[in-house]
Amino acid sequence: MSQMPQQAAVPKCPSCEEPLESGDRFCGACGYDLSVVPARPEDSPTLAVNGAVPASDGVDWPVARDSDGHGHPAPAHAAAEVPGTDSGGSPLPPPPPAAPAAGTESPAPGVRLDRPDEPDEYPLQAPDPRLTAEGAPAPVPAQPRPAGPAAEKVCVACRAGRVDDDGYCENCGHAQPRERDHMEQESGPVAAVSDRGLRHHRNEDAFSVGCTVLPDGAPASVAIVCDGVSSATRPDDASLAASRAAGESLLGALPRGTHPQQAMHDAILAAAQAVNALADEPATAREQAPHQNAPACTLVGAVVTAGLLVVGWVGDSRVYWVPADRSAPPARLTEDDSWAAQMVAAGLMNEAEAYADERAHAITGWLGADAYELEPHTASFKPDRAGVVVVCTDGLWNYAESAQEMADAVPLDAAARPLHSARVLVGHALDGGGHDNVTVALLPFPAPPQGAGSA
Image (cartoon, rainbow, N blue to C red; front, side, top):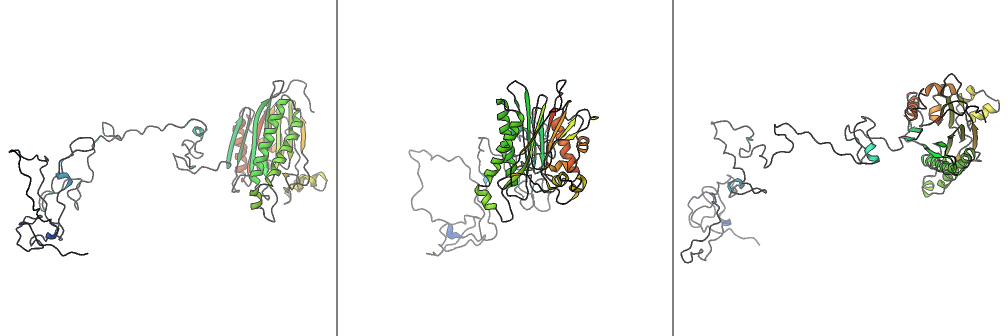
């Protein structure tokens, strides 16, 4: 319910102290609305008892300021006009001096002309921790890096900044590649590197490397490399499942005394079962299309023990032998399960003609639920000298197809620096165009005992 304004009940205007007449509703000088002035209380003020003066609140209240000139009174008091203390108990700083009148001295630096009472920066109640005693910025202390694997994750661009949880470098801001876009691992003398390449949107290769000990105490090195079949469903999952299953099978069988060639055969079967199981998962059914096949991949692997080299494969990934003495001839130790290899084996084309055909890389053997017939290939060798074993997908050997071309690309110190050499080989493929995913594993082969020959 609306109310009419009340008549003035005070002799002077509360805002400008001008005298008022009985019945005024607004101050004639400043326009103050007198209806907001509460009526004077009827009771009498507190009187002194026994001559004692009532206690004061200790604050010397200032006189109210003038109106703002628009019919609205200014605040009764400014905050700086009332004594007080800050949160630490120290006295508040004194209010800034009033701005000089027009035509007098210019305003002091740091005072806004539109708000002469407010400085640009207010004094701090405590020293700024960002400044030293001399006024120079204090050095920012280095943030401690977390312990464990996260501490080793650095930016691939600047090689200095730490990568945060969102996948960006805290130093240069560079977005980091996804986990499988570029992978590196070193296990004892064995190392492997895998890269997405320059044309594919994801890395469909995978690898597994490791070391173990045979029952007689001799060391054994293992490397498995898998290449997902791009025309199939979930090729990246297929290669990952196969590499893990084969690696675990080998590292479990060799310490029990299983012959390395038999262990390799069993590892390929274990990998096939792991890939076949993907076809029954709901994720495959959702992604299945009429033109797609079940998850599939190729596999190639190698085992190096004292004086013995065992290889196994299904598909068109390869193993190369590169001797430490580069005057000795290198060799390719696997035969592709591909259309081109079949043409060469049948005598219908020579190798140059077959691999120049557009059907050359059509594979005839793979791991997967729709494979025609699984035929694991295994072979064992006894090299008579030290060297290095190169296990790779076609993403590398497409740019170093012959054994001699591969040997020329392998660094001379590959046996001593396998991880560095694997990086060099991946770089060789990327420099050549990087049309496919690139994965390579290197296993140094130590000098065998005297008298060893081919198996």
